[in-house]
Length: 179
Image (cartoon, rainbow, N blue to C red; front, top):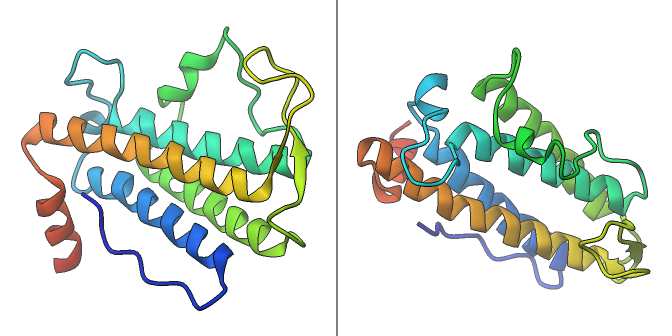
């Protein structure tokens, strides 16, 4: 379910982008409301996706894109050999620890997007086989990409949650608003 994103201040494109990104993050956070770690790890569909796996994935992806935009290495290097690990909590990882990590990543994303001189500034994409060679993208592109990535997985989260216990986004929003 899409929730209302407040209008940005006139001329605040960064604020609008960040508000839409946070709105989509909320869809994933809501899908986890009231679940135990075991329930959040359940895979109730033909897919291997779980809510806790989606949470870990979106936090890791957001961190990695902002690191690339800063021209730094992502915190975790993923390739074909370990890609599947970004969809499963491991070791002492919990839903609570991943939510706390994502909150930290989100704050870093906001600070970075607000600090860049221009959303038109660019950075190089990595020389990975799934990216065009020598391609550069803008800060605007990375913000929009994060919105798209998070929204896509928020939709997955809606389906997984409803498959787990029948809770729909409408009900989860009402629960969240009730406190």
